[in-house]
Length: 196
Image 1 (cartoon, one colour):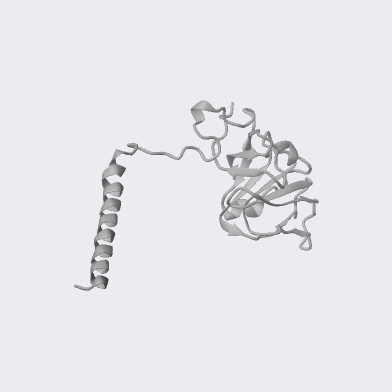
Image 2: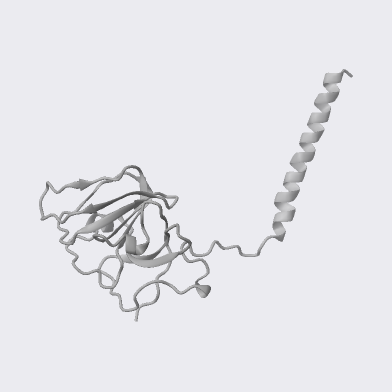
């Protein structure tokens, strides 16, 4: 048997040992893991240890849902808010059109299944708004102010500087009060406090 054949057999034996150790770790050691692992709420973690956000007197707008967002402004604090949620294509197309009162909500979150680059417009939206486009990793892509526009086809379009997964609209100038700036990290999803 030559030196090369012995090295090949040794490498093959070592590979089999490594594969066997991997199988043992995966099946046998993995069985000792938790019986029912959970990830918890994406924004708030264990709801039993954290109060849920939201004005208890808020009133859900017809046709929309709600969700919580968590904001890390980068100063060591962590803020949570309850927003209206536009989850479906129809809800996102309607947005805050014809809305003059958020009825106790801090704003509206637009949630997409995949990263998109869609611009926004203010057609039929009487309230000046600020918008933050948020990437899937929670980083803020772009922030801009948007002006009201009547019911017409030539309303200005507001586009982000890159792809995003979420957009958050609030009354114009209110993003900093929510802790949302260009350097913030935003987590979208979770439960709001019960209403009264």
